Length: 112
Length: 117
Image 1 (spheres, rainbow over the protein chains, first blue to last red):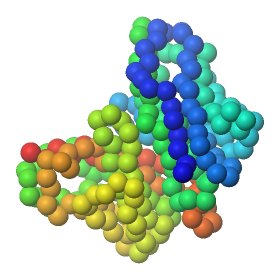
Image 2 (cartoon, each protein chain N blue to C red):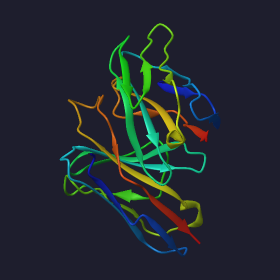
Image 3 (cartoon, one colour):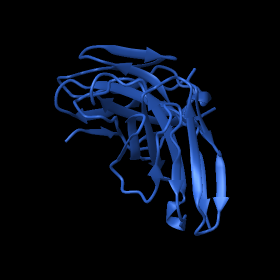
Image 4 (spheres, rainbow over the protein chains, first blue to last red):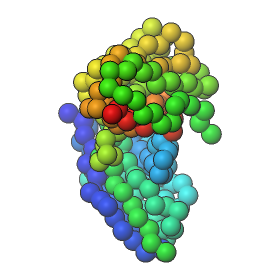
């Protein structure tokens, strides 16, 4: 079946450090891939997405590239800020089913 | 800016009470969802709807029920709350593409944190 696996957290970084959160997926067909972010006390919100192979999604300094050959969609940011502290979810959808498949979430702490 | 609302934001109630968690969206989205989020953060789909008068159970078995009488409104009801129902409940909606497949973004409400004593 379809699934999403993302690296376990928590991830703790100092401000201005480089961030990578790994995400790999298993899916039939050609899914769309997403990163959602959940700030404390809030619901999830879309961070970025990519709908086909080799597409790069980007937003707020975050980037992720849809790699079909490695079935990956790793999230990166060159210089994190304290305000980036949140939980990040990798997700896929559009493989013929009705629903979005979410990863387990990775909590990020950024220290000043 | 997504326009999806949940009330109440926080609810503490005693065992055996009937409760309804409200969810409304003003985007005209066909598809709506309820998720239960455990303390480990993982999301579990408990109900979804393709449109008015359409509701289905999700992956995680839940004693709750839902209704979809109006496009914008998707309330979740627990007839008799128990401590095991203590959790964060997130409502979401999406525009909905053709058929059952969906590649579009989900918009989430802020959540309701339910505590059953």
